[in-house]
Image (tube, rainbow, N blue to C red; front, side, top):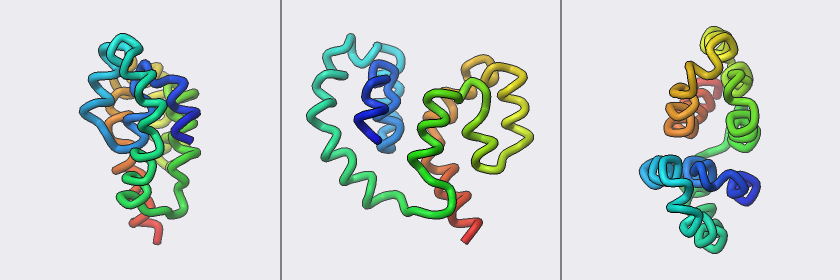
Length: 122
């Protein structure tokens, strides 16, 4: 999954996925540190993956599917519909992801949102 999101690494998608929000924001605003950091990350993904596996637990809401939906269809709020957040999904659909700012918010908080949903649904 990390390698698929790495394709969009110039916007930090893989770093957000692995729970590295600060560097994800840096990658988001600097195009992956002018693409140099993006290339280096290709070799760092296995370590980031192991750390994320220890930090996040599985549940009814699948992390991988939610991240795919956010990355490719987030502007339409599809990831929010998937997590059962119908009202905010409709808001995202009508405002193109709250004018893009909602997408950045979700990149920063999606892992926490999924963990909360998974804990709630158990």
